[in-house]
Image (tube, rainbow, N blue to C red; front, side, top):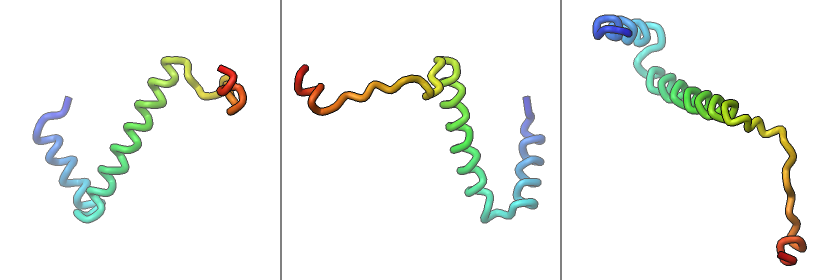
Length: 65
């Protein structure tokens, strides 16, 4: 997709725009966002949207079992 020269240019532009100090923080935040996006996409594929009924079992019901 990208060659080595294109990646080098993008990295150089990022360092110039953001500064060397902010770059690790930006990369960390992008990684967190990517993980969240992946987990949400997997949940949507499974059909698990979290809006379904929740089975609540009380302590008394557990003791009966």
